[in-house]
Length: 167
Image (tube, rainbow, N blue to C red; front, side, top):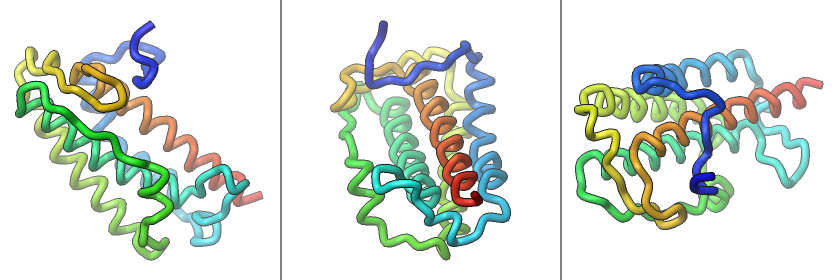
């Protein structure tokens, strides 16, 4: 069954495919956001759902946090990695829709660095592990797979929020 805190891919991807998925995310995100208006970005279907913009901010936060955690696992011995309060980070963010280009740049820069690190690791490094405060012991390769699923879910969430805003 595995760890309930870790998302699973529907099909197995090779490490090369995983890295390609990670590398393509910033451009896929730009494509989803292309031509959107500030009103569409901030529209919310309900108070229980994030807007496309709030989801973008979360995706930026998660991209930066995951990149740091992955680096810890790669470069440290069984690091202990804290959780972050994603809801609080999104709700207390001081970002505005005018910051979208900057946010996209932050995501792209962090992702470029992560792809470079993962691409140059020896194969055995994929089996390194860390201790995540929420999920316990986690292996790098499993965690990278989780990140790919997590990002895909949020790209769909942004696209759906924008689709609903356009109605």
